[in-house]
Image 1 (cartoon, rainbow, N blue to C red):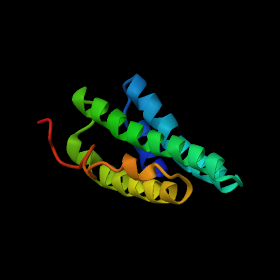
Image 2 (tube, rainbow, N blue to C red):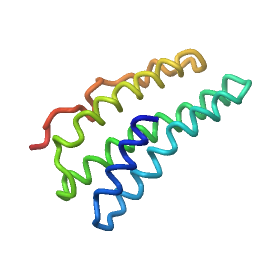
Image 3 (cartoon, rainbow, N blue to C red):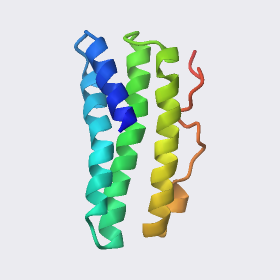
Image 4 (cartoon, rainbow, N blue to C red):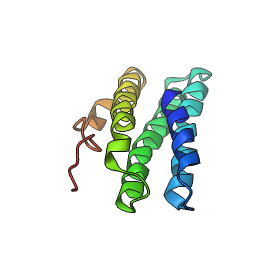
Length: 121
């Protein structure tokens, strides 16, 4: 929820109309909503499906932040704590998926796939 709150503050600060900003807002909201929905499911297949959606939303958030940086709506430094939080969220979701899905282990990538560094500068 902290990440979702951070995005709310960021969206309020960025005055430009940008599709990535709107999508970031929606994707950040999707993460906790799909985790909550997963909690209400009984079958492992259903639980895994909602966790995969939440994980995809978290990865999407990292990409939307990159787009906002590339278009100079925000600075890379502004996103560092949020990207670190996203790495933790994705790792948590993959760990949860490991319990419900036999193929979740194949989803492990390098933790820095959308790392917190300045790879593209």
